[in-house]
Length: 94
Image 1 (tube, rainbow, N blue to C red):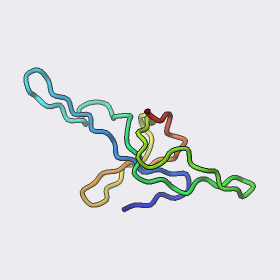
Image 2: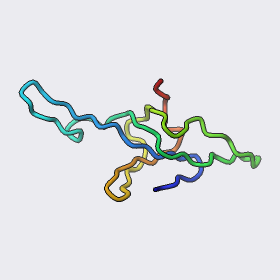
Image 3: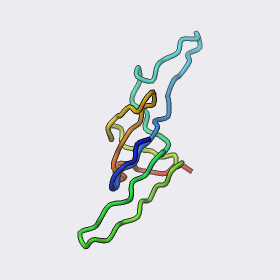
Image 4: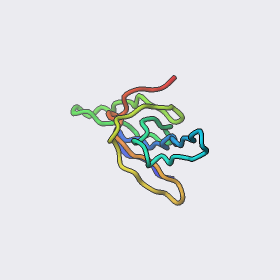
């Protein structure tokens, strides 16, 4: 498993497959990039200029919304993840 550093988080992106009335399945890459995901790992937090560690706002298991083009896609085995800074997360979905 990957361990993010600093203020980074690792997400699994929610799949966005859709089936049409005719039974045709539209792959997620045929549409815009999904903007929600589930946090699977959280870094230790960012260190401020005065040396204090700022706590992370999100935690593992949170479902979050993020900026459309945020993050870097990585692959670990057969799993695909998105690694991004916490500042690119815009909301926690309750």
